[in-house]
Length: 54
Image 1 (tube, one colour):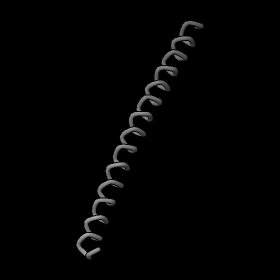
Image 2 (spheres, one colour):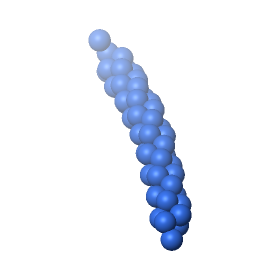
Image 3 (cartoon, helix red, strand yellow):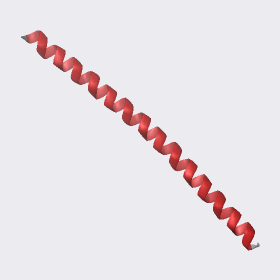
Image 4 (cartoon, helix red, strand yellow):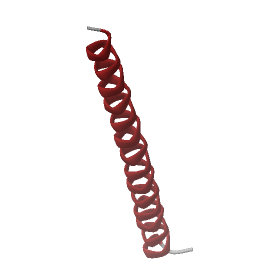
């Protein structure tokens, strides 16, 4: 195997790793967005319940 082949394989591994990390970050970001939205909705519902008690 030549140095060029080794370098090409290393670059491909870097590209693959970066792509996987990017996809994971996007998934985590979407999950976090859903969790925050749910938390805000729950808070809004709780506030409305407290208002109704008054």
